[in-house]
Length: 81
Image 1 (cartoon, helix red, strand yellow):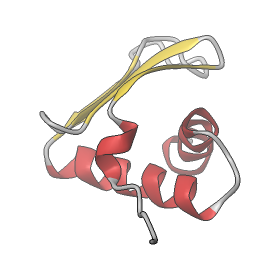
Image 2: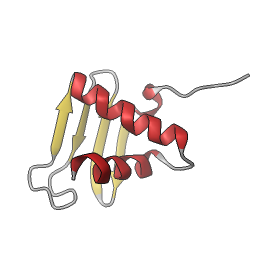
Image 3: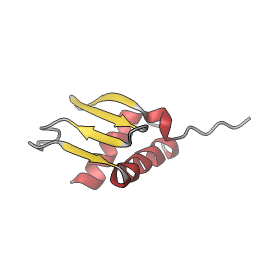
């Protein structure tokens, strides 16, 4: 039996590089607290934009031998900077 983990498995609160991150797959939003990677405003997205972020983090998580936290850090370094 092959089990594929969908995006809902990432629903939760994480700490990445001392930053609080929340991925909500039910209400479809992603939130990074202020000052994450020296961003004074933090990041927040919802709806289609959040879906895109969640899909990218999820794909990286599934295709690499890493944690969700590692995938979030990769996403920030790749897409937000």
